[in-house]
Length: 257
Image (cartoon, rainbow, N blue to C red; front, side, top):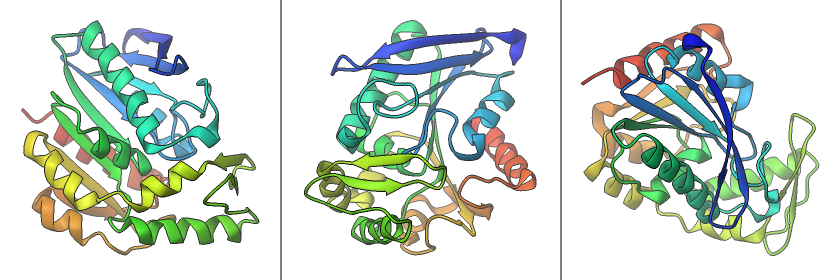
């Protein structure tokens, strides 16, 4: 880390819950990278991918990673997680960043379902946005896929009550009914088209993705053109060679004027 700069903090969301966050990097940097993790993970992301990315970018950026409410070390309950609630969490973090460093540019780096949270928020004033593993654009399909995945792992799906998801890590994740309703009615194409009107978005799609099936990504290709790139990697780029390649490509985007 640049100069060993590390700051741990709590950011209060609009529900009064404390979001656990950490800032690392170069305080003199011109830009701040805000990392938006995926569903059921935390500020480090799967296979510590966000931790590795932030360490690499500590020389040229400030990096802020945080846990959504209900996950990691943040307050709140996991079964109360919804995309709209996560949107408010991200907005709270962005407000903190803008107030703390009003003259610094803000970049967003979002992974997996964190990409949906970012699209749903449609934040203003973002310099660069990078999606490292987008979710399938057909959300009714991804809802059915997630339902099958939960059941295959011995979990119980109740879309009108509480779903019990037995994660590979051994953790038990509880999912509320609002999560399913919002997911199945989310129009990815409409939000994606709106986002790129005012924001510079680059999407890296890992292939083969060991988590998300390779279906319904044509929307990203059609909307983004050459800013949609399929690159080698599993869902979290766990292979060191693939992660190194991702970092190189991300660096080219983030350092481009």
